[in-house]
Length: 123
Image (cartoon, rainbow, N blue to C red; front, side, top):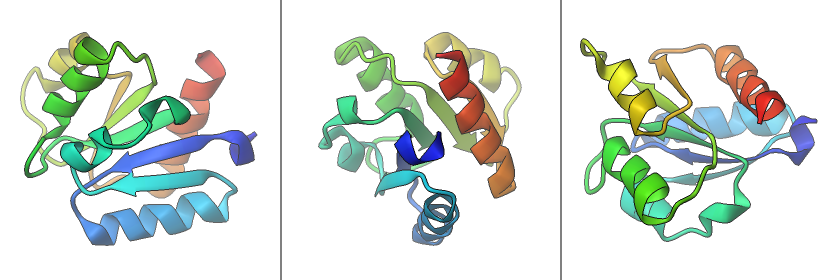
């Protein structure tokens, strides 16, 4: 199943992008990446099955990109928010804004893979 799943990873840390690309590709996923929401918004978003989205990024952060995805473009692509900035009520706010899941950094790669597969099975 994983070889059919195309992921967009939106993350400003090049190190994290490279690591997750390696892990997901090694397991047969197709992955593309963007360094922030502005970069991601220039892609053909409809082609992706899942978006893994960092919250804190320059230029356009995860909340702004999620708003663009859901409200401006009307897309329902599953989104896994990925953040090290846990704040009270943040998860509820992001889920209400259209995220499907919030995962705290650092997270093991197998946790992210499990969540991607879980989201794909439920959609």
